[in-house]
Length: 263
Image (cartoon, rainbow, N blue to C red):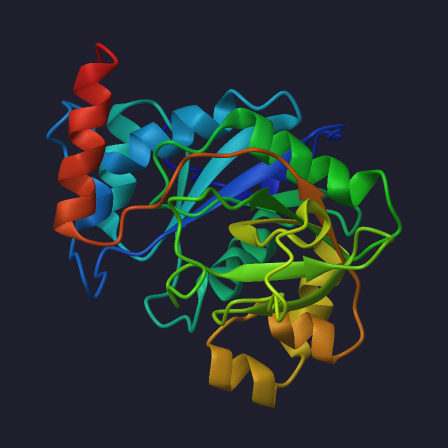
């Protein structure tokens, strides 16, 4: 399928599955044009689209981008892309515009899949969607137990702590929870947050109207806005080894892994 020429028509049929929307900005700061990097023979965004499409809970996959060049690239592999405004503060805002263009109903489940995660496991997306639809929370997301090789002190790895009910208590770039006595118990093992989110269209509209919060600003984590305003985030636990692509070096490492798997 090519670019959606008549967005309104996309919402006419009823949808029992989630719609994965992938925000894809061409002008990334650390790695410009990374979504079109194609050392594997496919643009990076195609790997993400194909991964999202393998999730059993996902009915459709749509790329929301600020670039006609990305729209054309997606059309070449018969994907669906929407051209959105250049100026958006984050991916959630871009998805909000895409949802409006598509005129999706308020109860439609949308899953936000980052455009720079070509190795995201379908099971992670399914766990994210279920964390929403199987609970009465406003947002579903996923965390994976941190491996010994991962550094909890690394501010580029976002950590999350959950309550007994499985809902998020806090997200941080700092090492949380802090094991004061070095007890090393599995119950308080650090959890690496995976930046995939599921929500219904009605909540997304509410979120877009919320003012930015202090914790969101200092941590630079937009999910804290929802927590600070009292909304509930369910966090599913799902083992995951994938990592996103933020730099040319990380892209080269992905290409090597892709080759090692036989393409």
